[in-house]
View (cartoon, rainbow over the protein chains, first blue to last red):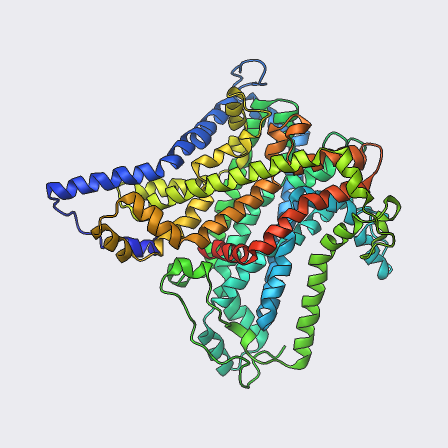
Length: 323
Length: 315
């Protein structure tokens, strides 16, 4: 990343002796820079730094918006570990993330490899694959209910062609998460585009020399293509994992909300949904803040593990994937 | 599949074309074909590729086409899974227009989206320029902080941010849905900075000699040259603001202040589960929510695709 700063960064002189005029210029540049950056600094202080500190404080209180917060020590955290719904929502979230992220990356990769063979028409297919990504997540939540409807849905209609009697995706607790995961694969267009861009950056010479060596298509994919795009694959794993842990809108639309108390929706209770309910439906702001911090720590740990593991598998071309 | 079969390639071998600088290159990728796609394959392999692509195309487009088609079907036929309605009716649109204040919701959403997209583009461009053009002590630390904020789950700041807007008396208004964008957004700052870094420094040195000040260099030279990146920022944020549900759920109380997605959720709760099972109205409202995004995509599809490709490249 930083190496790309080169065009605008002059050679770094070793501790230059400044004439008074230069020193004044430098002070001026700094002042101008800070002026340009000031919107972000203000936003950071108001909407990031203060909220982070305040939510850490709130997590140690019983704040409910109406009464002023009382300090309760770590009891929110203690309660969190005993609350069966927290455990349930965490389990749901882990299952969802652990299945949807690998599925997302593998299917994206397959589609990108296909597109890379499509020649001139790859542009058309790229557009087609990206289109679902424009669908608002609320509408996707509604599509889950319609497409995966047990009696009349499109998905079971399709399975019916093959003589398969499809499950009640939206009401049977054991099929709710599979339905949501399948639906989430519908919006992987952006990952296909990212991988296709990476595939096109693989130097042709590598393929040419593999051809000379008589490698077959499978060997080429395994030994050249995958290592060369491993940086982008890893990027997708990281951002999709972080997004997976925070999944909210589709499941909330389909299975929660005021009109939606007709059946148990425990199977779709993801961590962010339970957190949202605690904060804005039950007004347990202290408890919800504690939940947010636990989520932050979990995401941090998982990301660090992924980064450590990735060092063994990810190949960066001279430490910079832009060449 | 025999992709490495000997034989002349379909396209003349072109040297990989790359514009001079890394950053803008990704936003306007050079048309080139590398990889196994360039070699000629057996007819069987080609047929299989096209079959797979065709199947994927059906999977990716059918749900949307079906949704649009279902909005023109009478209530009893919504679930018949046909692509062409057996009975074509415009009734659902009239009914949903009467049942819900859709014009109001659309107006609210347009207002929020336009404000969110323009403010975030202007503020992020200013900040990105501050990080790209000037050299000053602490710059890398500050920029590292910008990147670090992207890793922070929204849930951590969600509650105090709500309390800020609450104490300002803005809960229940549209302000919290866009005003945070006045301060720039880390992702767009990153994207635009990459772009600014690709501009040749000599351009600005020449301008400096001609007497241009810092503001002119930004507004008259850098910004016009970075139009594609600014368009990408506008489009991305337009989509993000239009489709957001969580913030409208948190901040909007009265139906008259709803955005379309928030209103759609209310309609689902009312007509989907809430007794009547008028799914044809839910479907129609979903189409009304979605179609503006599809139009946006067809207007700016090149920018969407190139913007996404850049994102991955820099990760």
